[in-house]
Length: 177
Length: 425
Image: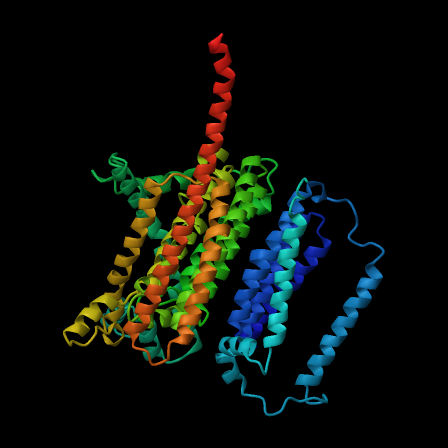
């Protein structure tokens, strides 16, 4: 086993175990902390895949912003802190079905791309080491390249801007006339 | 392995290269090298704090016309902090009843870890850095955003209203000031064309401090706020919320927060030096040498270059650190609404305008523009924006003052109108 595989297994255990804690722990604050750890494990995967930009974005966005938002939401509703409700409610069958569907889809994609028995084999792709070294530069270029992702990128930013303006408009106190 | 060669390699900060040359490119050599790098940098950071605390107390004392530490360890009180550290270490480690044990005990550990992690991409000399990531500056921003979580953990875990208030304030402040910090750091990144710290140093033929001074000022103000130092020490404002998020901490657990604050401040100084002041190189000296037709000093080509760059780097870092202390000693704390207004209504729009202008100027000038002409135009653009921003602020301030004075005059008129009839009778 190479050292990369060892690290992968450690990260996988951290990510999955903390993910399990998120859904089973009754203390919502601890669940949010566990979710942060899970996000951290995913950032570790990005590092392993030599995508440092994605790893740093994961830290900045998911741990630095989204988790804090969630913790704030939990803090604002203090009675939520220790609920006696069971984490298994009537929706668990539907949730299980959805999870299995997504899991099956991911396995199908991975098998068809990487296994020699699959239908699609990506031929003529750049050697991984080359693509990996310049991944940040390639990512940046593809975001502003009209032939690649400039339109999705711009649409996403306009969407976020719209959400930002909308949230301000909703939160703004109505003027007394 | 020859002990004298080993000693020389260590002093030249080339121990890693020496180990590779002796034992070959084995995996375990790299592991040993990396572990040694981590140990050296983090031990250095932890130990320098003892000196930093002494320096801060002494400098502030002299600025406020006091003596500062002057008993323990000679007339300059050099061992005062050592005594303080020993006191903190021997104190009982308490966990208050009703505290969230996990959050309470995890927060001090995590905050020191994040403060130390950021040092990985700071170059101390040519090639002498923890990891030359191609996302260097972005990495620092990402890791520093985790420290917000630690403050929140501490504030919530303590189960104390002042701690929680401090945590709320810390989130409001740190998340807000991250925005102008990221925006101001984008400008040197545009100029250097890279996020890697060494590449940014290499791009500074003229230090960026003299090319994009406005970006440097915005970065410095946000760095003050991000480290929670005066005038932005609302997170621990002693006179308002006792000590903020760390009010329930004692002994070394409190010491860890203190430690992280000082490591963070030194890191911000180091980052400022790296991005705006040429890091370990001497751009200004090289420019003067160039005027006399002499070749520039190339530290990377010298055998002792890394060792020589240490005093240069830390000399600059401590100049910036001194400015941090200076500001702490002289400025009062701002109110929370002033702090947020300054950020969202002034720094963020200003840095957005600056990015726009810098990006356009950068694209408009042809690629083969002389470096002096390029820097001059950038400097001019910066000065124009700064003057415009200050003029806007001045007008706004005058309007507000006029409105306040008018309201005051009205009040006075009301009072005299009520008082006058009585006097006439």
